[in-house]
Every structure is written in structure tokens, then in C-alpha cells.
Length: 354
Ligand SMILES: *Cc1c(COP(=O)(O)O)cnc(C)c1O
Image 1 (spheres, rainbow, N blue to C red):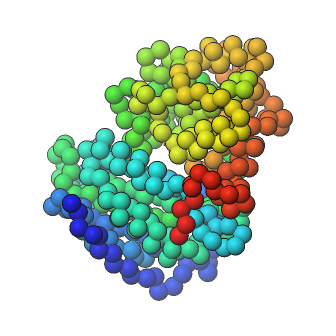
Image 2: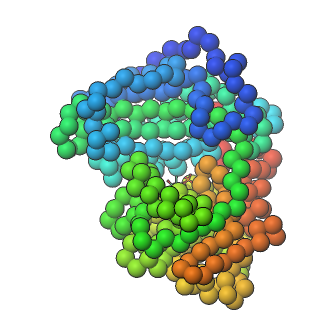
């Protein structure tokens, strides 16, 4: 067993908060006063350092930038009207982080380091959580290999870090989506279920091609037949067909098990929907559309929570949606916000108080 972790806190002399207006800040551009950093060496995690946010010094031979043993998470902390701070379902992200770590042949991070460390860091930078609706503090835990050696093999040294970024309203305008039939995001047996850095780099070309055609994002399809829907960009995807909500199942390991996806399933059930996690072909999506039964299509993820899809293009066929008249996705958004900002009882125990 791993001994209780040591934590060492060095406080910043001055808060950068004095120079920043927390309203209307762009996503992911500003970082709080402190960060968490801990090294894995000789088979064990060393002292956890919480210290002023600062650049890293690295050797050009550092393994992660050559062979990509790198994973991350995305979590949000919110402040309610009473000024109390809480993090949304961080234990689920912790578990997923270690699933990603195992797939990438990296060491797992002990719960104490991930959870207590995150709590201490957020507590220290609590003033960075904007106290306004649709605002939050984005928490970015990540780990990468740090061997200084350019041989292809699992690294012996790793670094786990957490940085914090205040975020304003993430206005995601309804998206135009291109159903991708050439490039793939994930294959069975691959790393699609892991939040591995390489997955995002690998997706950028296809996304750029879709943008050239005038679309915002791609709807990924399965690698073998390009027939079954998978994810929308870096979000999970839901289709409301009649009184049923359908989202792709996780069995093949090609879908990232989103915490927002899981929460959406729970809330949709509470709203009275039948929720089906199963394979869904694009042909079935088109049939439902033609029958007038495909009411809503949306993506889910921590960054935007719920993103509406107003247009879906498959080959020469275009499906359009009148998002202004939607009922489900807006209600879902509202329920998420009510839970996060403490306006409704947190019956599912999703808010982790700090
Ligand atoms: C992070 C991510 C999601 C959404 O997961 P959440 O836990 O809801 O933020 C969905 N798909 C991909 C590919 C992702 O990387």
C-alpha cells in the first residue's frame, strides 16, 4: 500500500486576481494563483507540491512529447448564491483518470493525491470561482511521462498536475454537424474510452476538413462500416426520438464515458424519458427524421454541458432542427444549473462540497 501522501504548500506572494475581471473571460486562457505538482519516481509518488502557478522546465528528450503517454481530465467547481463552493462529481473523474492511466501503461494516481490535492488546491484558490450563474472554475488534472530518454518504452517517471482556469459562460451556439465517413476517432481495441492526449490531436484534421465545408464539428461514426453514430466532436451525443432518448452504448470501448453523459441519462429518466444506451445507425436517425419523430439532437460534456445541434448533414441529405422550439435540451440545461448552483435539492449527491 501507498503511505499517506505528504503535501507541501507554498503560497503565492500576490494574487493575480487583482488584474483580472472574472466576468466574460475566454475559456482556458487564464489560470489561478496556484497549481499542484507531484512526481512519480522509483515506483512511488513523491511529496505533493501546491505552489504558485509557473512554467515547467523540461529536457527536449522528455518522453511525453515524443511518444504521447499523456492523459487528462476536465471538471468544474461552482459557487452558489450563498458563496458555498462545490465540485461536480469529481470522484467519477478520478476513477476515469485511472482507467485512462492503465490503458496508457501509466501508474495510477492514489485517491488521496487526486481528491485531497484537488480539494486543497481549489480551497486555496476559492476566490477564483466566479460567483455567477453560467460561470465556473475549470479544473484540469493531467499526467504525462517524464523520462529523459528517447527509447520507445513505458516511461519510469511521470508527473501529475492540476491547474485551475476560471471560465465565463460558454456560449455554444447551435452547431452544424457533418457526419464523418472517412476519418475515425476510435476503433474497438483502441483508446477511444481513455482521455488520452493523442485522441485530440488525431481528431483535428477531420474537424478542420469539416470546417472547410462550412460545418462546426463532425459526428463520428464507427470505424468498420461508418454506419453507427459515436460521438459529436469531443462530446457524447443524444437523440430524442419520440419519448425515447438514445445515446451510443459503451461496450465497444470507442466512446468516452462522459460524466455529463451519465448525469444526462439520470436527469432524462427523472424527466420521464425512456433512455436507451445502444447502437444507433445513421439510417435509423434519418428514418426517424423523415417520420417527424426526431425531435432533438445534442452533445453533452463538461465544457458546454449541453450543445444543440441545429443541422446534421449525411451524404447529400440535410436534417435541420428548429432549436428555438426545443423543450428537452433547455430543460436539461436548467436542471443541471439548478443542481450546480444549489437551487434544487442535490438528490443524486453530485455536488462535492469543499
Ligand atoms: C471529455 C470528453 C467527453 C465528455 O465527458 P464529460 O465527463 O462529460 O466532460 C466526451 N467525449 C470525449 C471524446 C471527451 O474527451
